[in-house]
Length: 491
Ligand SMILES: [Ca+2]
Image 1 (cartoon, rainbow, N blue to C red):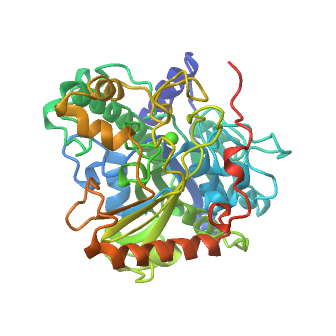
Image 2 (cartoon, rainbow, N blue to C red):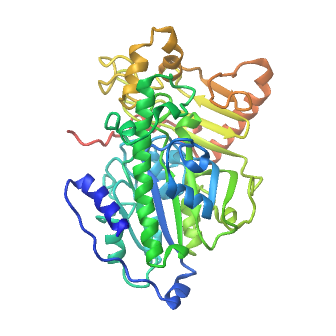
Image 3 (cartoon, helix red, strand yellow):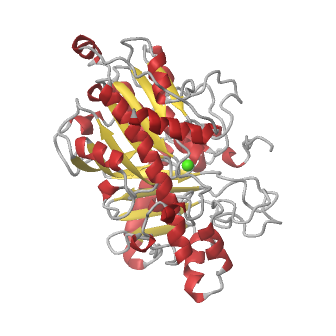
């Protein structure tokens, strides 16, 4: 009953009530298992603001993620998985549609919607006979109904994964989104240290100051990462007990980087590089570490292909099935040597009367990260002056936190000055980082003569791929992202 108890605790925490799940789904017979083998179940587990490499499988010495580590050990661990956008709604829209978020009109922004003309994988699977649903945070935030979409793009909401399984008609394959608001802020201050996390052993990102406040803040983030991992562990146990784990493709990942200055919402790896493990018994050799560059927009065509459903032409993502079925480690597909990322409007944080965001696109390969900042006169973390900011918040594209306050309050202190500059000051139109020398992406080498050829080549490749995917930001036919409605409920 451990599985039920963990779900019970998590849900009780969300709803503030006690919830009891006492009946587990019946175990499948061998014949039922064989019949469903051609149409595996799909369990998609997505954390909210969880960064690579914060998992045991990636070598983090402190955070404990036994469920993720198990999926990696018995499945495939992706070393180079990236979100399309380091922001909830556009990332989730890209996951659901299998398309770059810049192709999704309003759906490219935070607090937006998703026009009904964009097909989404859960509802395509439902049409093909799958039983679909989600629990907690899946699509959003925003208003999916705003332009006439009639169903939640992630399918109906259920009060728990066990409740979803109980509602499923016998013998029907399922597609479930196990969502979470972990490790999104706010955190309970020092919950990490109080749970036993040793803040002295935390390996801090190089672009954050080494200060006890930051160490506690990261420990509190780890505490919630671990809570999400326990939710996934409970789901795995439930599938194992019902005999369905072997016929389920389980994906565990996150929607954008950790909510710290220069991480979430930015196109450095700390905002876009996602943990990703995929477990599927029918796949190739287990325990592989794959270095192919993949985008979370590749998941939708993967799920459709796995289920034998036609992939819509509009989907720009590329199925991962070849990688999953391979026996190889390292670079399985030599063509997967880079990935694109982008950002449009997160919060309305620029100076009045501009309601727009901080538009950027990037290309990342093994050796370099190249970023194009389309409006370098704007503020990458939001306007510093709340009286001049459109939404009245200082640095509004960085979630409020003890670390943010520390860096901003000490911005004139030489010990902190560099961290403030990296996170909040204006940036040039082009940034280039040589990852062979600078894996933390701290030293912009754009404009240096020895990098001129690399910079030109990457800029050219990025522009061509954006043009080929009909990105309004580079097509020059008007850029609507800045003026789309901000669909946040009035509080
Ligand atoms: Ca998020």
